[in-house]
Image (tube, rainbow, N blue to C red; front, side, top):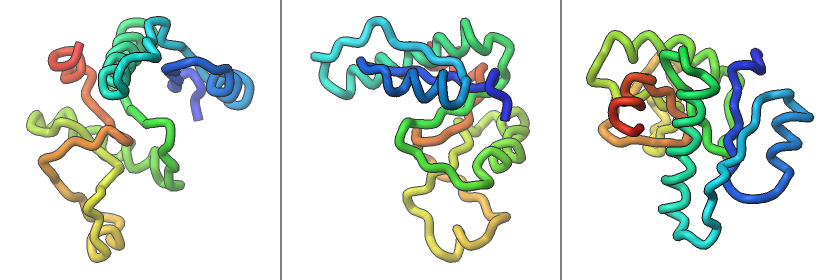
Length: 141
């Protein structure tokens, strides 16, 4: 675990996330200064994601080739990071990939039981995804 490779981006008020990030895990933390708590949730979430991505790519990880996004309520498996580490080269080799995701809401028994199987889908799950920084800069920022 390398704390320098982690950034927690907080939307909204409260000191709990900051305390957990800085005190419990000694990782970097940033708060979205432009949070409009009265905005509709979808608009607010979109603005926060844009802020977090821009801060991560332009300030915190300017030399990164990929970025792993994990939403706040995700509970990860013991092999979570090794999964992404093994699949990260696919983002460079296959330009048709949008992301590598650890989430499959259509997970079926025969497939999730096979630790070597991968599923290619045509939907995007933002729950836990590894994305190319080039793609993020080109399409989202």
